[in-house]
Length: 146
Image (cartoon, rainbow, N blue to C red):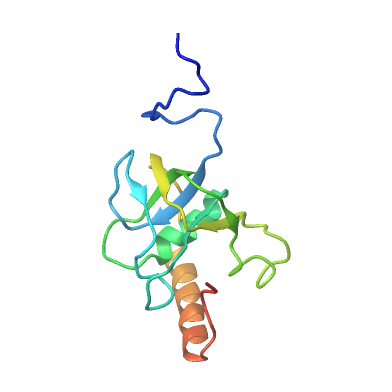
């Protein structure tokens, strides 16, 4: 019998005891796909070295609603494959502590599921948020701290 500590098995199914997170996007992904760095951000016109996720559905909904592109808004359940850090773009900069439970990583996230039923914001709320982001952009504010 193989020693479990020396057996190098690749997991093909999600670990039921591993923390899962939410990732809002317009990308069309499948279970098992990796969400990786190197894509242009929704908030700045450059590729980022981090990818973002949240422990709250509310933060992921905003991510899906503000995502660039023309695809359908989606929220995926994801597992981190590497270390996470608090997202400095909202933690302490906009909200004391980390109430949105938003994180980022340079390591990929693995898609393990999709939230197919969720309640988004009203068109008016989304428009106000987009206008606020546009005003920050016009003022020269750094929207994404890398």
